[in-house]
Length: 243
Image (cartoon, rainbow, N blue to C red; front, side, top):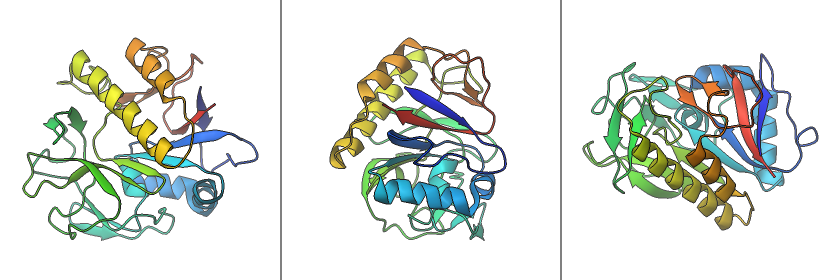
């Protein structure tokens, strides 16, 4: 099931209070705000979850930025103190696709078409192209085809919003494209879970994504997240997949 952990000014979830978490999701938003709100304790808990509890990490857009040791944003290098520090320096936005704060539907090397909304990459203009991990898809419309989706150790990192829902804060994404993106995201989750010997019930995630269960209730503007119906609206929160 999906669990929603409300987050205000401090991180309250630990391995003790939320056992059996299989997938931690750091969503889009603002990487500075994320590292500031999670702080040192949140960072320590996430790293402990990854290193000592067989955990998996899904970082989307700002969640991808948060995974890094530092990042360039609009040409300025930031070394925020509570970034996760598990990935080399990133950069964004990719202005060949869309100038911030605009977004655009963009095609990836595997044929997927997904929403790009200021997410990071490496080897674009300010960072070297070398990187750890395995690139799963690249940006075909950008010179040099920098990475859009990759896996590294226990992390699945995506610059594009594979979770975006048509006509929810974004336009230009069709239902067919959203369904295909959800299938692809579930496949990636399964893949990184299998690689790290973790069971995640990703097939159930696909079912929920395809049928739209509870998509009216949980919103992470400008994207919809799928979760059990709670009547809550998430504006600053963290989602995890728990069995």
